[in-house]
Amino acid sequence: MRKLLLAIAMLLPTFAVAQEDTRPPLTVGVNTVRANFDPGLALGNVDIPITYNMFDTLVARDFSKSKDRTSYQLVPGLAESWKQIDDRTMEFSLRPDVHFHNGQPLTSADVKFTFDRILDPASDYVEARNLLKVIERIDAVDDLTVRITTKAPSPILLQLLAYHTSEIVPKAYFESVGESGFGQKPVGTGPFDFVKLQPDESIDLKANDSYFRGRPTISRLTFRSIPEVSARITALANGEVDIINSIPPDQLKAVESLGCCEVRSVLMNHHFIQYNTYNPVMADVKLRQALNLAINRQLLVDALWDGKATLPHSAQYEAWGPELYDPNRPTPPFDPDRARQLLKESSYKGQPIFYVTHPVYYTNGVAVAEAVVQMWKAIGVNASVRVDEGWTQLTKDNPVLTARNSSDWVVPTDPAVTLYMTWSKDLWKDEARFDELAEEGETTLDRGRRHDIYQKMIDLFEEEAPGTYLYRAPEFYGVRSGIEWLPNTEYTTDFRPDNIHFTK
Image 1 (cartoon, rainbow, N blue to C red):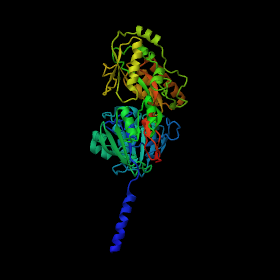
Image 2 (image 1 turned 135 degrees about the vertical axis):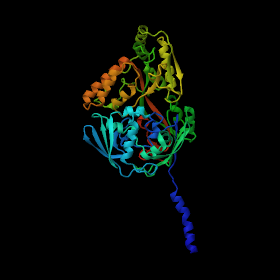
Image 3 (image 1 turned 90 degrees about the vertical axis):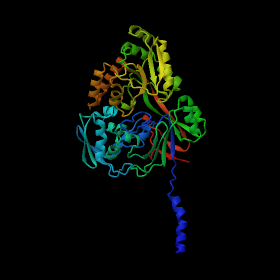
Image 4 (image 1 turned 30 degrees about the vertical axis):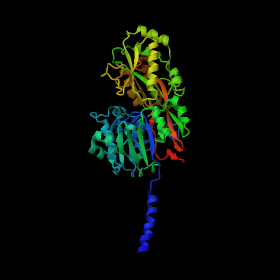
């Protein structure tokens, strides 16, 4: 017996070592960590990198086939297959082996609840509801079968179901903790499980080892808020973090010279300026047109982005595809003489115009604001920059505000989202025709007809000038050596097991 016990004792340390998790943790230094991670609400550029790693959608986006990671293919996600029942109804078969982080199995009731909570007119999910408004109802056929019926034939339903607003949440848990509780302690099906949130400081996640797409290659994932660029670079150099985001172009050489790290990049969203046409000063279309013509976008790209940003051909993306994108549209013109003439013809009498920007949300956000304001001053506009952490949205309920910066979505890769969702928010008083065309485009299956509709919408956008596009910005990441990882467009920092590996 004594020999047997001794043999067992000798085996115990070996067994403990065998069970030790040898996967490395990963820490990502980001510009900010906010306080709510309900995917129906957390739709900002700083939220998506985090929620994308906690949640899944019925239909997934595979960026791996795209050389520059700016386009994707739709592939099965939580739904292993789908089929068209009629011109307004699609049926989805759920994977039978998926569980939420709390152990609850995924069922059709969770899918139905996810969309019903957003589509409820009394809910807080205004932006998500506007995006998913084409959905009429969700029906749970059985535990693993869901039918989604749209109000009219929809050419973009699968695209919408692959977007972040459609990330699936667990019905029972959500109802038990409420909307606020869920946002602070989210539960999903994704590769990483929530551990702890410290708003403005960090969010800690751990590997979901039962993830249906495979065991994560990372044991823990932490997003740490480091607002200052120099502090992020220092943390990367010291090994306090493994990846950092939002590196300005003038700091790329500093990262590359560290010897421990390299820079990786991907094109992201279009950055633009919004004007509040409900403001009495900004209501004059000639003033808005003058402001647009006064901006030297190529100078912004060259001076502040080292030539690495690109000028858009108006309010459109190449990712729309050749049937919807028009490459012959010119980039926004720079014509200061014409701008001065329009300013004289307008009702503008020297009233102050404020360009409002967040201090850290966008790379170069403040620098671009200051440069644009100088260009406006050059044509005779009384303009100045306001740096505001509150960064209030422009709406008809805030007529005092004049202009702010923002960005739109490259995905879903369809103008029904890029155009309609960005510019149909009561921003301009005369957008009724724009909205009518948008409704038609969202329910028209003929792609030739859709091309004509969206080009007309762009014509209206340029004529009415509720804002203007500046450039399509790249996002630069600093990555420590030995980490094989690629960023995707639209801030989808994917740490699923097929997109991150370690060589040392």
